[in-house]
Amino acid sequence: MDRTEAAYAAYSVATIQMLVPTITTERLTLRAYELGDVRELTHLIGAREVAANLLRLPYPYSEQDARAFICATEQSGEARFAVALSGQERLIGGIGLRIQPAQARAELGYWLGLPYWGCGYATEAARAVIAYGFDILELDSIHASVFRENVRSAEVLRKIGMRPEGCSRPRVLKWNRFVDLELYGIMRAEWKSPPAPRAWRPHTS
View 1 (cartoon, rainbow, N blue to C red):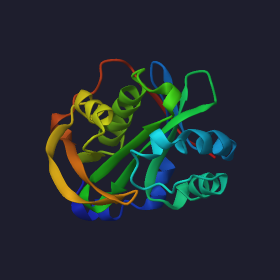
View 2 (view 1 turned 90 degrees about the horizontal axis):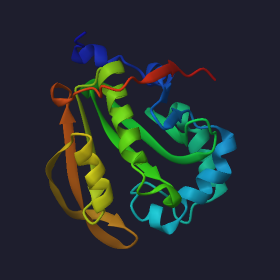
View 3 (view 1 turned 180 degrees about the horizontal axis):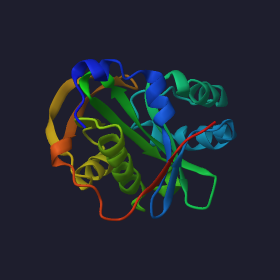
View 4 (view 1 turned 135 degrees about the horizontal axis):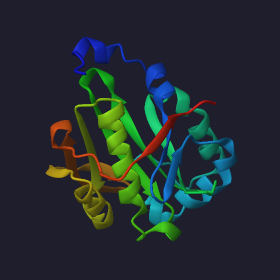
């Protein structure tokens, strides 16, 4: 069903958060963050190797930062998912969509704890969230950006069908150094839903 610009403008933050589901993929469960995630979130995202690739992150990262992030999720205007291995509760990463309802678009962001790099989990989670954005939220486009030297993350974006859309000048400051951002995007018309079944159910707190 097509949505007009006015309809998207009325698509409130509360509505977005109400629709945030639990998504099950072949190996992962994408779920709402919980306060029980604070310790693991602090440990994993606070690692220097992980923090180095994230733009919007305080560093060093404290348990207070983690608790504030989790508690603010419902008011964030974002669809934020904790990533866990199927059958396990322990957090291994995070992924989400920063949604602009009036424009029918969103920005994809994600991270994984260092012990879980190189296993294909980021690609698996990203495919599921892209499908959620297009199939459930009916967005028109989804974009993402990565630091130019972050080759691993750029490869994930290409694997899920995103196309390079250019590179910004080094105007983004990260740890006292200006860096380039590579820009990627995918339109709804370009998206092909994965053939494997995906289970999802609305999250209820």
